[in-house]
Length: 544
Image (tube, rainbow, N blue to C red; front, side):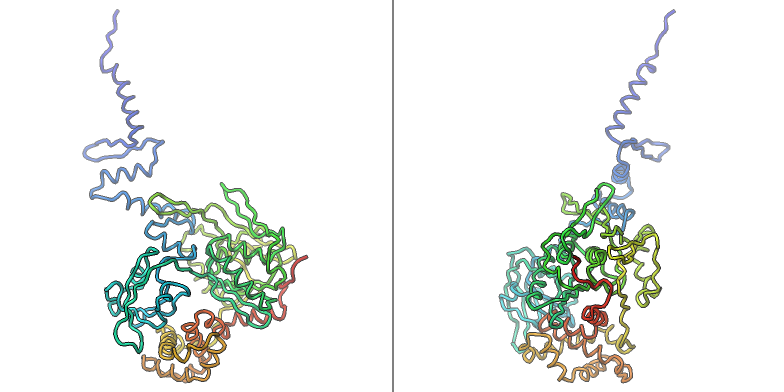
């Protein structure tokens, strides 16, 4: 008996094989079922790419694949941790500038006053200083476009003034006591950004250095500051890291190295795909015999916490202030061909005793960043006793001191936030920016009298002989703030000192501001007392 094979049975397996191969190559197969279309993605094909392909082909309106990708990547990272971020190409230069320690522009510090760009300082050696721009100058035009009195936002002004090194920009300047508009053609150049805000001697033996962030130039800046103070006889150092949100890790470990003996562990990092890596102190420190006190607060994070943790865990100095932020994650940067970048968390860093100071983030980024609000509401910024520690995260230093992990560096000496002198009157004048505006107007109108001073002490003494507070009260009244003698009496010192400090900053920058404002800085005054008296169980001499 003969059997006849139907053609349909012969070709069906072949047809199915061809369809399967096409599905593997294309990745997406669209099947019509009664007018609706469903997407099938081959199991080994990237589902995310398949979804984007499907949207691009079938969505009811036209869409940009590029925009979809740009919006999707941040959502992916948001589900990892609070510090893994995607940076679009248009934002990368602006975000990197503070960390790189320079930008390209004309080299001025300015503020907007009455909708006018007012030059506060020219950066030393920068193109504006070289060509004759002066503090107090009003920039009214940029490349023949009027920028004064037209309501341009600060960022728009910045974008017009900055540009590629070597390019030119024309600015029209109104200067006091000079008729008409002065025209300056400025050639843009690379402008340094400084992360060491100030360094000076508080007394004959006590130095003070304030670092605002950790950029590529921070270690060099620190060394210059420390060597200057060493030459002036510094035996004790207050290193102020309050408000320092971190930055690059290497400058922080290099600074910690200046205080620690050879072989001491500074920090180590470790991650799932990144084996443990130790940073060990060398023998090259220039402050090995300098008594050290580090100031931190709730805004001190990351690289700041590396230094504070290394000093605390090695029983090398005293840490004072309030519990730090709690950021102990290491990000690795990756560049894309379109100029954008990804900073992915690849490891955690640990202090020498083995504690991670990274605070929990499992509840999501919103809860993570609201942690500081909770600290305020719980009274942690005012009372050390309000802080609750987990005994399972207790560690012991070589000197027998107990430290805790799991959420920032807890200082050895707690200093609450300063609320002295705070009244409704003071709050009103601060909210309206009147202290700063009065100080700027005074500086602007008295530049010739102030120009001869080159240090904070001289400016402070001169201003004490002026009727600053009385003039300010009249100015505040003209701005609608009713006089209240009782509250002014309580806030007198803080208002008067702030006015003097801002005037000094307008004349000689931070070298004028910090020595004056430090007189009402309760945490700094307490730190000066502690380091001068040798108080505190971690204020030790160099470990032998």
